[in-house]
Image 1 (cartoon, one colour):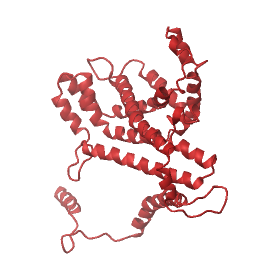
Image 2 (cartoon, rainbow, N blue to C red):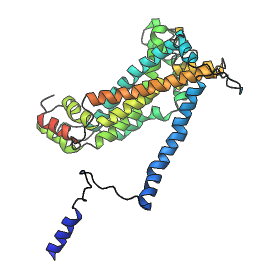
Image 3 (spheres, rainbow, N blue to C red):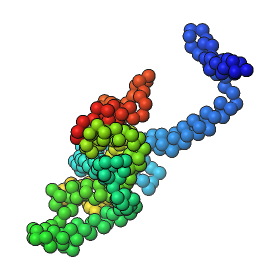
Length: 353
């Protein structure tokens, strides 16, 4: 009886006979297979086409017109709006500003968030089981709190904090004996306007990504950290050699989301410096788009700016994927490794950090 069962199992695992030319035979399209593809592939694809591709194509079309937004009349102008855009000094300044935001905000935010996450989850005693610091739940709640507050509220609060005459920041600095900050305009000086805006964006977002990284680190097998401790690896070496490779996908996803938020940054900037700051030093593309559309009623030109912003965002995401692939994040077909394999090797080779 046992031999019969084993033979049946072996027969069930036998591969299907190949067709001529060595290719496997195609399965017949049954009703169940067709309905499965329609439900789980056709419906999401249709939603993507209707709500993403078609509106984007419409935006490209309206970006090639002189439509004023409140009239059915328009003229097709081709690429004139795009040519005009890249000759517009104000738009080019806004483009440089969002490039600065995309370069610094994700990097600083994720570095701080990762530091907070590692401190909370792995900052406990150096001996015994790996565990976080005392009161980890309290620190998670405190770090996440700024993200709960709406971005517009955060911007308005910090606009009052930065107020040169009655702001809390100048009051604290003056109380510490720094009299030069008595009436210092943080958002009114070209040298400090953009760093001040960056600080607020980072302050508002770092808590969310800290909680995201805490959840990712919790999924790393504890035996990896215990092996690293046995081999004498310090906290820094453990973070670099085990934690970062293990949560690499989470870091990549967070970097893309943060880059998209930084390239837009409309709410924070509009709440603090709605006029674009001194010499347009904090002006973003979305602000410029908003002013052109609703103040000047040049919706065709504004739509062209939106298309460029969308393309810049896609390029940013593609660069993040490319850098991740070039630095060893991508896994080629047939060479996929088990999760945590790099981390296990690092733990085995870890030295004192």
